[in-house]
Length: 382
Image (cartoon, rainbow, N blue to C red; front, side, top):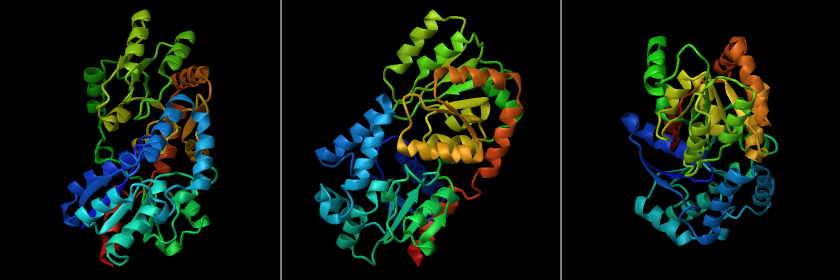
């Protein structure tokens, strides 16, 4: 079976899930799936490329502005029908070259017009169209574009995702609870205590018995690392800090400069290709933007989560915050000094973090990406 995956580099979660699908397909030869990734917005006409660039700029610079962007797309839906598609000839060439059996969308803007167009090119009975949605809650921030009642299958990450789709008109018989679509490393990264201690000593060069905070950035590089490091310094917290910078070109140099002026601080910058699954099993807590990818990874890893909400919360992030509040699996950081206050409390007592780990274990989906790929394969054979 040939699966054409539709994604976009708006944020990092969509491409992460697309990559996860491809990696699992290679690990599951019994399903006999071949995959190809296509980003029709990123490689499309200037208007689409501008939209991708604008999204990522807003995420890095001014998250609060995304409320305007989000609501505009909710009304306009530029990819809402095959008639409104731009760059259709390029997409037609991709379809005719691969002739996929399954069109698998991991992006809310790609499962209407592109699905209809693919059916018109290849034949409605020739291709199955599947949507995977990694959002964690319904309500404001859950785009109506995720739901296409005419698609063959909607797979939601958690029960709240499926409930949101049903409320927007997705037929129940086409709705499937699939769990998190994460890379294989998150399902084989369990470490015993000896391995964890060795990793902390040898790779991070930190003390395994002490609290370790991971400052994470979005894959596109959005972060507030300097503000948080300054907050920890003001509070005079001697905490071990691991820093990930994503694709930011400036953050590593800025943090290195900060370290040079604060040489007593225990701060370690690590490469962007670090195995994050292993890292999450070895740190005491992670601070990240409230994206669905980072949140799902923390939950699967049972790593206490702090949500970085500095600069405002994007609509898609707001529904992640709602999920985390509902299940009490994260603390929200709205001011940099909030971080120092919470970390100080967690360093004094492990009871809170252990309780968060237990709640993460309870809310973590039992389904795995193997189940998602198996469901897609079975649907094609119907």
